[in-house]
Length: 104
Image (cartoon, rainbow, N blue to C red; front, side, top):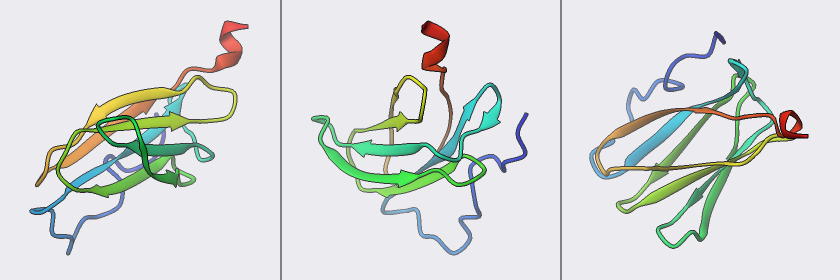
């Protein structure tokens, strides 16, 4: 398993009462994917924000109330969509992606 800290960096000093913290790690074959992008889409599927994953595959969003979808995009891999988020909570997600090359 990769050495990334579950849930990402510390949330010390972050007020999570009025927002949802959506964070996690992206892996491929149990290894962190540091060159992926994670998009935050609203209820209708519209783009809201995007962050690159860190060298350890980690990402984090701060979101308002609502229904959210994460779309993970990485080189040579299928995109992965996950629905998330509840206000006032911290959502930790492990996203495993599959290599698109395995399907060729």
